[in-house]
Image (cartoon, rainbow, N blue to C red):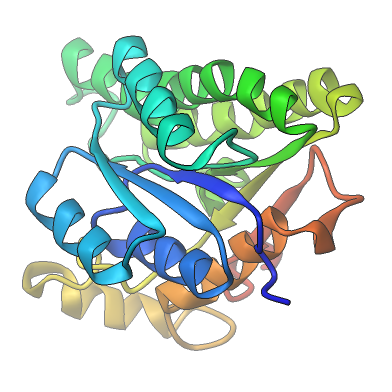
Length: 244
C-alpha cells in the first residue's frame, strides 16, 4: 500500500521549489493534496499535471480568511484534513541596521504568523479525522544563527512546533519541524547566486547542496504513520552543516 494512502494534505507554497516537490511525492504515495500559493498560474499548472487527487487554491498565508477558505475547499473536495505542511516562506539577508520595520514585520507575518494561522485553522479538521501530522518547515537557521529576521522567524517556528506538539498530543496530532540547509531550489540557484552557492557548497561536510526531493523524503516520513512516535522534534537535513 502507498505510504500516504487515505491521507488528505494541505501544502502551502506548493507552486514551485520544495513545496512542489513535496506535492509530487505526496501524490505518488497516495495522498489527496491541496496545493496553495500566491502564484496562481504555476499552482494551477502543477495541480493539473498531478491529476484528480490534486487541487490548487490561491492563498495569502498571512490571511486568516484565506486559511478558512483553503480548509473549506479541502474538506469539500477530499474530506477532513490529516496532514498539514507549512512550507511557505521567504528569505531576507539584510543587516539589522539596514532592515526596515515594514520589512521585518513582513517576514514575521509570512514565516511565523502563517504557521500559527495554519495550525489553528487545520487542527479542528484533524480532530474530526481522528488525528494527523503537522510538518512545519523551518531551516537550519532555526538551529544556528543566520540573518536577522529570517533566523528569528525560523527559531519561532521551532518553538511553536514544540508548544503545539504538547498541546495536541492527546488529540493524536503530531507536530514536528524540518530544518533544511542549502537546497537547490529556483530561488537559490538563480544565475546571480549560482556561483556563490557553488563556492559555499565546498564548506558543507557532504560537499554539495541538497535536491528538493531529499527534503521531500523526510517530509513524507513525518506525514506518514511510519513516524507515529515522533512529535515535538527537529529533523535536520543540511548535509552536516549544523554538526560542525
